[in-house]
Length: 147
Image 1 (cartoon, helix red, strand yellow):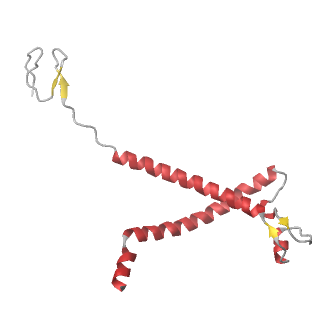
Image 2: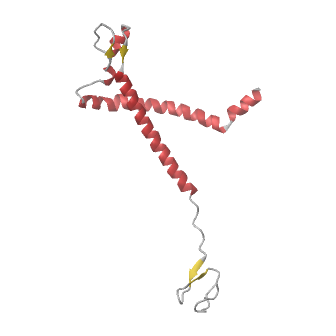
């Protein structure tokens, strides 16, 4: 059983998947930072100094100035601003992954493109008729062709 498990772990696709998950997690952190720290502040500024992370609906009778304050007090809240950030985060990640997959597919098609076929005909230099490439004499004008 241990031998089978070791063979399973050492298979190439399992290792590739592990690397992809680790890189994907790190990439997700970069995108989250891009959304929260770079994109959302200017968008919030354009919308009248709105901080999306502090957009919430208070379901209790207390008054709270921020989402963090409400959560520390244990008040039930609907944090729709955090949800908006997550949606924008997801859309950016999806767009970037789409662009990477699109570029990879384009490269794959370039690699799979067959080499151009060798020519099978040539032109007679005397009468300009199309003749087989191995011909030593033109079938149309009977001129001798060089080898």
